[in-house]
Image (cartoon, rainbow, N blue to C red):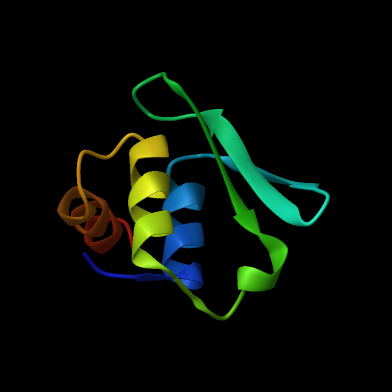
Length: 80
């Protein structure tokens, strides 16, 4: 298990077509992904500029519809 930078995570959310809205102390990314499925994931406002811890990252990867970290990073690599 690894960590992910906040910037990389936001890049993937954007490339999936998710929209950001603020809800209290969290940013909520939500929308319909390219497969036509509704996705929603939230991240703490103060996470900017930090790495996302591995346990949290793995949970968020699943919420975005990826089967694994590897799949997430492959998507990131292809869509930079």
